[in-house]
Image (cartoon, rainbow, N blue to C red; front, side):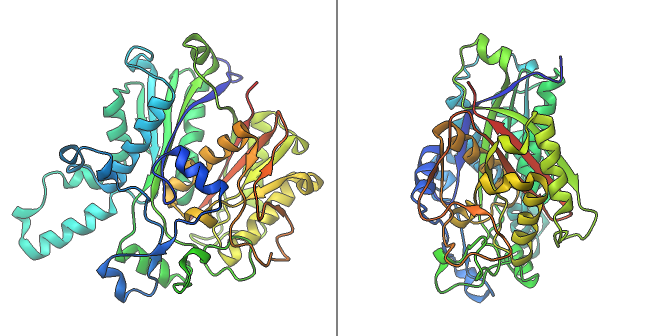
Length: 414
């Protein structure tokens, strides 16, 4: 199969801090509603940070309790999003051959809730009380395996792990699988459920989290001078991707084209961004080259923009390097201002939002950007949504601890 095979987005699914599905999430983002709140758990009382962004709809409100009992929370969320995406794509049992269907579902941390909870069981109640489902629930490929079993995917099941770039890397890998002819359909995305005392304490010790506990909905402030860190969120997002030939043959509805992807590594620091944005700029340039886009073709960027003092500036620098003078004509949004940071699911969710922005020709505004940082110097969408012109192309950025950089390039499908 030629490397010019067109890859189309035909299904979307999500469960997020602002909505239990794609439609409610999109409506919340257009209204700039925040999903950040004070954590309603007793264990949060003694933590240095007591805010987060849990999912708006508990997975047990959607899943059968018996089926959910043997799944880690990250697996539960992935299954909710995958089922929605599969239904949305109109894929019935006979529409995709199992041997031509692959799954790529990423996570940054994996089944950390199971790992920590079962360790507590071991210490307090002994080895015989540890669940026999512990290992399948804690393994990082657990969400991918759960979705693969659900859909009977036999062309391959993969689980990239690259911190906060994981969800975007999953979609980039899916693009490669389709172009290589290894599958006709790939269900791809990311999931994360790590709202627990240990991850929160660890991120807080790094001074990575916002400490604005007094006003949680104002805490995530990408590109604002008053930003002081990200807000830990949870959720999952999944896309159904198909070759154009397969999508046309079954009469699928198309949201957008996944036109390209670019990846790079900073090789700079395990947690801090490379300050000039050189690695991120390479990912941006590679994605545009892969998609056949010039900087002047790009109308919109969904930024990684986590609300950290160093990361936001480094990303702005990367955008200026990669887009040159065209950056002034590109509207940028930072949806983590509403959702918080979903870690391994962030890139997948922001890919979904980017696709919807192109499909609906509307870009959600960035919340809490009251006093823009002078070092950013980007056209960031504020106050209200911004329209996009017909035939637009857009980029979605994701960067992760370890220096992982991933950019996805989407184009409106005509």
